Amino acid sequence: MSSYISSKKTRKIKIALVAGEDSGDQLGASLIRNLKEIFPSASFIGVGGSKMNDEGLNSFFDMRKISVMGLIEPLMHISELLSLRKELKNYLSKEAPDIFIGIDSPDFNLSISRHLKLQGITTVQYVSPSIWAWRKGRIRTIEKSVDKVLTLFPFENLAYQNSSVEVSFVGHPLAHKISKDLNKEEIRKNKFHLNKGKMVALLPGSRKSEVSKMAEVILNTAKLIKDVDKGTSFFMPLADIRHKELIPEVENYSWVNFSEGDSQEVLSASHLGIVTSGTASLEAALLRTPVVVVYKTSWITYFLVKPLLKIKQFSLPNLLAEKSILPELLQSEVTEQNLFKAYKNLEESNNQGVLAAFEKIHSDLKADGPDTAARVVAEMI
Image (cartoon, rainbow, N blue to C red):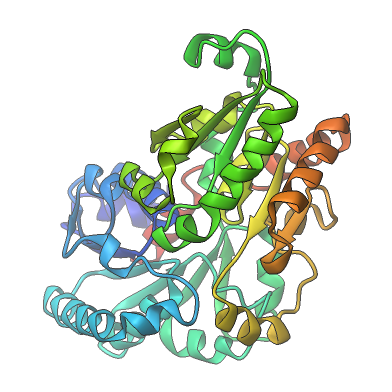
């Protein structure tokens, strides 16, 4: 720790953070926890979920109010989103924090960052917008809005090489949180009481819109698997158990073990899985679970975005490995038969190459340490 940071430890620091989804809530909680080590008397304000609140965040409103995705879905809630953002801007302006950290959710956060930056408040974007995948022109907005971007993945820094934006690769907290020394058989036996048969993880996504689109096709695929292998056990962890209400005729899937908030535990024990693209696919890689990665959005969003995409693959493990190590199914490819075929191919492979790639991804994402992001932020205050 620098002498500068040491001299500031006793000062009353006010740190504002805004996260808009579960993955951001996890990152924010880890960041707050590490910042408290540096600034024990700091206060934390903004917007977050239960994990950030548990670490001491005073949340201005419920994070779920801004947890919408895609291009079209936010338009359906545009009036409420704009109103909430305006209220939040006014609140943060009055509070005048020492630093503002927007965690992911760039469509919501960059406007707040720019508003506060114009008032002389230091601003940070934690998790780079996906300019490496599409909308590269957004760099100009980022340059006007933030003082620094903290990236989770090493390949992201290349997107900023011709930009004035300062970038720091800080690694992913999950790479430190998740141990490399997993004994899957022991976890299955002790936590899930399974001594035989395959355990399969089914992750339909954390947002309501994702569950609505993905859960039914994933469950119907699981039924096809069950029909040919009756000894398989299926687990579907949900971000919110109320999301079960979004699944048509959910009572027909009584053979599936539904749970809430334990996706990492389920993945850590599973032999294989089917997951909706996002942080879950990264968790699967770090937990050494080969998975089929799937993704669907609204057709309007898909047709608007597809021509702008600059990447051939979309799952984080494949992007990080720089090759196809996991099967991916996108949009119209996401059918029960296609999913079943991809699953069977994965099941019948020895997956040694996949597991070796997972090991390298884990090492690459550790950066300088679990507190790297907090140290970078502290130096900026």
